[in-house]
Amino acid sequence: MHEDSQPTLVAALAAHAATGILICADSAVCNETDGQAALLTAVVTAVRAFGQVHVLAEAAEARVTAGVRRNLTVADAIRREGARPVLMNELTASATWPVLIVGTSTPEPPTDHNHGLALRVCWSGWVAQVATPRVSTLRPGGSCVLAAIAAAAMGVSEIFDAARARAGSDAGYRTVALNLWNPDGSVDDQGPSLAHAASAWWLVGLGHLGQAYAWTISWLPYEDPGAVEIVLQDTDRTVPANHSTGVLTPRGSTGIRKTRLVAASLDEAGFDTRIVERRLGVDMRAAAEECHVALLGLDNLPTRRLTSGVNWLFAVDVGLGSGPKDFSSLLLRRVSRCTPK
Image (tube, rainbow, N blue to C red; front, top):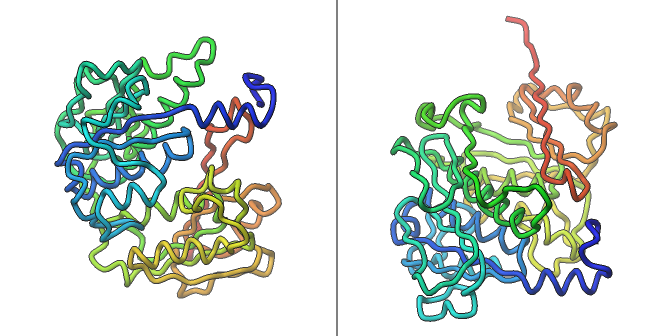
């Protein structure tokens, strides 16, 4: 409606419901933690971007080893997120949909699958890449689940932009890469092995950004997630529209406090959660022993201005665009506290 491609809300909803995407993953992707993180990130974001999501998972019976769907089978996790697992002989319905291929070894769909667009997501070390299937993939490197998550999200975003078909856009027909370790570096600079992560987190604002933080943290390879404390701070309750942007908000959710919704998901992943159901104010102070890394997903400048006064050792604030043209733009700010020696 904002882009004037549909005249009414009813027409826009109908157009969205008519869209679809096919996601493909081979046995290796289904059985490895990084692959599962990529596959389920693709599913959870695609369900919100497209009307219908079919998933061709070669080892759908594999058990999910991390994340908020830990211990479910891949097939059950896919269903829980609102997508449909399919078999090879059930691809007729999705024959014209765009295809997202997860991992370097997953084959393309059969040639009789008359899709208009196919993209492959792959990752190596800290580098995430989205490209057409015939473009050479990344050279083998270390394992970093963050790159797998980023690659999947980028892939869904790229296909979504291709479906929008904006004038002058080459989305879907280009190679997109992101080096999480060194954003200015090349794809050959894959960084060190992921060996360290925060021992405690503080998430402020549990909307689209806060839930994305929680989803990502749940995949980090902690030896004992129960030893990792995550503070969840928000005052809002869910409304049905939150499903379209919140990866932990189920369809039709109404009136649930976002703190408790996110805590329930992280509890399932084995983490130790605490809830703060009050606004971030001038009187909010982190105690000396609360050495949390704070991740903020706020939507207003006055609250952002309070960040440096809370006494967090380290805080990261991310802001997103709000309109149809800049909704995927990102601004990141880092706040560190300098303590005397």
